Image 1 (tube, rainbow, N blue to C red):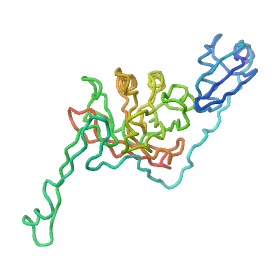
Image 2 (image 1 turned 45 degrees about the vertical axis):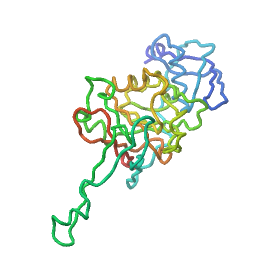
Image 3 (image 1 turned 90 degrees about the vertical axis):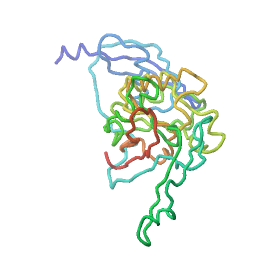
Image 4 (image 1 turned 90 degrees about the horizontal axis):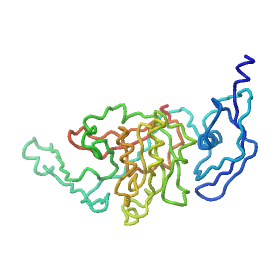
Length: 307
């Protein structure tokens, strides 16, 4: 035991942190348990954000770092903001799809009509009995929709090949960035969150502009580094209440490329994320099982109190 304690290492350092919504904080003589003889400044910065559960961090600078021999004192703290189990409640996270709705600039609105009207159907049935059979003509990227890997990659899984386990009843966390001063949502936003094995929903607040011209310009998006972090940390689905998960001026579409390339579905044009707790609920967004299509509208919803 004595030998094990001597071999244990701790990093002692000062730090400075800048926040995306302005302001900052400093720390002196901060200590963190480490494994091994060395630790990178970036890893220490990530650990500070996680340990202190800091939100909307822009930059972390590590100063005066040194490694000492000291016994580790690890403890496990409860997660902040966890919803307490109770009777399940449902929160609808989807926009209503209707005739004339423009979801994405340049794509046509859906046309919704009767294939067989109630009036016409009466001639086929007994008196007092009628049915309506509807018809809809729309592009796949309409309303709140899910992107499968096939949307970006020709050899990726299409809608018919997605496992229900990747779409339904997913343990979920929410990243809230409504106070962000810029448009780019970077990896530091996600450092305080446990994203492994979870759906990650990004609340930007942009859904308040839904169905207006404002919705199409100046939206918030994920950077390549943020998408790579979510991929590397094991997120299983990423959703956003914004116009696009990418900056539409970036024709490489890095977030789509990184996430869909790793088999991680994307849900865009969500809403009502402000009604959700930080975690402790599940997310479902299952599209129609269509072969040869990469995108389709979903009825996305959260089940609170189900975890």
